[in-house]
Image 1 (cartoon, rainbow, N blue to C red):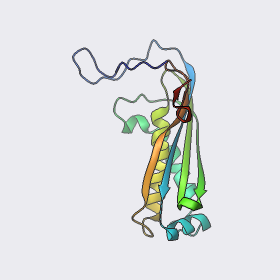
Image 2: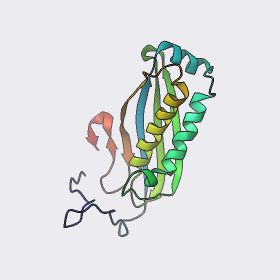
Image 3: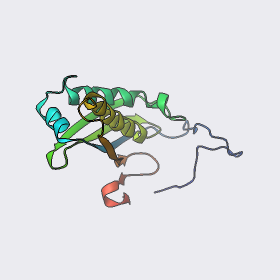
Length: 165
């Protein structure tokens, strides 16, 4: 089901935090994706673990996890959620001189975790940029999108299949 009504506005058109108090608690999970591309020198340093600032992917993983937990402080009108799982995975893509990131977030609650997953993957990629910028200031973040989400009124969404299932 896909309900396109905008619920973040009151009758007068003012932005409001959505009242979710009547919604049932359900298990909700979301996965977001993103990629950072870089020059050959930066990619080789990430791949070999020789970036002078330290373990790039380890620090980026922790930063992404921390960001998911602070999403409601960063995104206006976003509900604070008790997260029950946050996982960030990286895959090196030598053919693109890139690092792919996936952030999966889970909760049992009355609202979804898409924003938390998107915030986590974005922050993880920004951390990679920060740790490697001395080698390559021209890195590019991209392809940030929701891959899949389950739970809630809108149903199961899978991007690869083009929409809701």
